[in-house]
Length: 458
Image 1 (cartoon, rainbow, N blue to C red):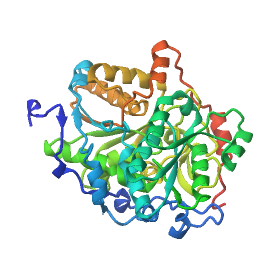
Image 2 (tube, rainbow, N blue to C red):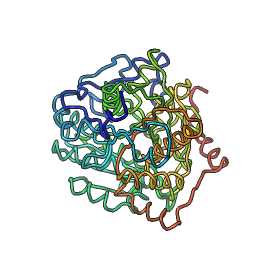
Image 3 (tube, helix red, strand yellow):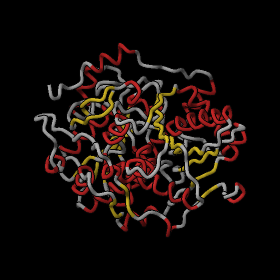
Image 4 (cartoon, one colour):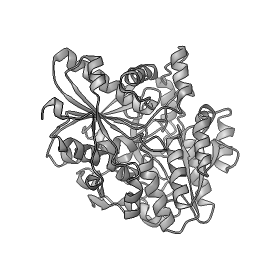
């Protein structure tokens, strides 16, 4: 198709929106290693997860055989308020870079929560309501997940308790207030409201927190209050399943115009956006139907893929959650407070970790000042202020487009724009004032964290 026929924004109609989620694990020859009971070291059974997660979500978490799961009508009805989301041809960015590359981005910030997180939040809230629960607990890093979940819980009239990483709680008061407006209670983590929070504060006085800390607190509250369950915005298989709506829409939009991408790029913290974006493309790759270059981009200050160890580890700092085999920096690792984006989890999705370990995708770690340079370039020509998380993908997309400029290759690049950065203006202020810096953990710091990994199978 000629360039003039490809619009700036490719929209699917409501009738073209996918009606099922896709499970990558069904097509994986090497399945992700199972979650383990930290007490027995044995694979977790559904009945052991039931006190933590909603019943239906437990089944989705453990299901490695079903490729497609029908999306319940109530969730589809909610999705239609903001989906299908647009796939945008970045013509202005291409012109700015003077590259022969064709750049597309899937924009997930066109909803009240401002990010892709709502795709799974509404699903998890739906299953909690269906089970007859009173409410849910969760953690949030930069605040996108907490905002999305508070909105979803408001929709289904559920109580929502959010433990927000302390540094983000302090840096992003407006994100916090959106959650409260939707009816959620928001507590900075680690806090003195839970036993595990008090333990973490005793061991790490003055800590600015991490997602691992916040997860521990949220799980404790969920399991000690009748009628509550814990929900998580990333990492888990169930979340990647729900987020596959991103990639399914992206592929449908590309197919509509006969476009075949050469590379798919996504930011990576725990894996929700990346896993969702790449899902159908990775499925083709796993089935031998097509090949793509798939790139995970993570912050150099929290480099799970590129500097982590592939091992069993706790998903939380308090060591009360199941053990997951993943690329991890160690459950005791706490990112530097100067790290502005979300992407603060010490580990990576077990599914994505297995795919990376098998060489089916690659990873790059990027310093945050260069991330914000890319974000600024993008904002000035594309008219969207991107979230810091998304800007990691923007940085590598720009790098790859500039390589095409050097070689003359006309590659087609697709990246995920997970959300907007209008609640991240403190970080943008630091960048604009020249006070932002790049903190990269030393080998010694990582080795100290690795030393605390649980001894599994020894």
